[in-house]
Image (tube, rainbow over all chains, first blue to last red; front, side, top):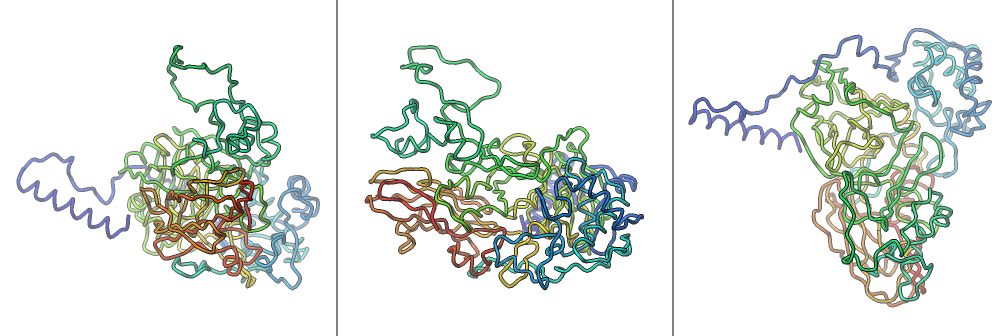
Length: 197
Length: 424
């Protein structure tokens, strides 16, 4: 229901309530107009919010303290990630993580079988931290420490030739990384009507 | 009855010259389960009862007992088609085996990103925080105390229809092409009610919805959708949500691509910008031919598909009712046209009430087949005036490589012998 329609409905109930009160003093409160708030639920404490609020924004907001290097990430990758993504991030069997397009062209709409990777498709480096931290490894999601995630992010960005081999990833350096596909993304312009977009 | 190719009470014989419709679909739905499984790559359903297990005259013997939970007739064995792979996978609704618009809950399609989590409803809480006046937790009982809303909506995976866009193969059923579409009566509380409860701040324009599955599935959603028609659903078709559909509480965004309706919802965070999660950037974005990719392509464009006659049906000359479903993520279906000559001429199909916004509408068209080879198509128009495009039109706009939102017209070839197959 549209907010405007809902406002009209609320006003009608309110008006009905008024006339009832006027004619029949002491009318049951069961017919009272609905309130803006019902005051159900419990306040969320800062501790509860901190425990679940794991998301990381492109600005870097949400990134935790700690840091990781390419060398540290390489070791963790071999232990926990290579089984699904291949020794160098290109072999699979699951998602291929490493690879760039010549000239960083972005021909995915034209070529049906092109494999998208972190290096040729992901627009934000911060998303790597957010996703690995929440969802990987798939059989033990959420089990990595902050330095481990930073290390993995560093190794993946290095393998994709986006950062140098001696770069350190932390809450300051990661949001500053500009991904090759950063400017390839546009907002949805479909609006219904006659045009096929 | 002979029009539909469902298994009949005694379909054990592989072929019947009097009713050639029966054997092929019976083959695929269970009467010859092993072969059907080999073709469709799915688990073989239970065998249909043998004729000797069914009384010749049911009026001459006592019937069966009562039961606490009912079950389908042993002759009816609709099955989801399950991808035999990892935790991030999908199963498809057997559209060609169903009637009406509501999908039985146990046949609702599935798309999970880390499997189906086990959630204890007694320990469940939904936390809403971020740019709100009052960060809050809501138990399931709290949510059920709010004014209840109940509405019929489809959920459709944005990848639905891919098999009707590229590499179109003749041996594809509606389940394989469009089975990532299901419809339920969804029961819950309006998200706008909860937004008023926590006091969404004026600058908040997006919210993050996060699930409690192993992927902690996340999507950024405009607050405007939350204030419009979004639901926090805890009921589905008269009962609690099924675990596969997000028990105990899911987000439900009417008309929008399915993955944004985050299941097993545990957290909503209000913000002034989208969060750019992996799912909404690297995954569910739409590459376009101009070497860009479309972000946040939430709305499902108008679409229709036949559910009869389709592969693997075989029809005989004479009258048949062409049947199908039409739906739009932008509102009501206003018109469905059917072509029985490969798109040369189009005829208005009858729309079955109720015709609801963001909910599939059944359409029907009676047709007398003259026995000559032809192609059947359907074309939907929604209340915005959007007309379902041809495959060529859609490819022109989206490119051959685009990855989601395949709503082009589907075409079904009827061969001279009556065999129906999917075609470009």
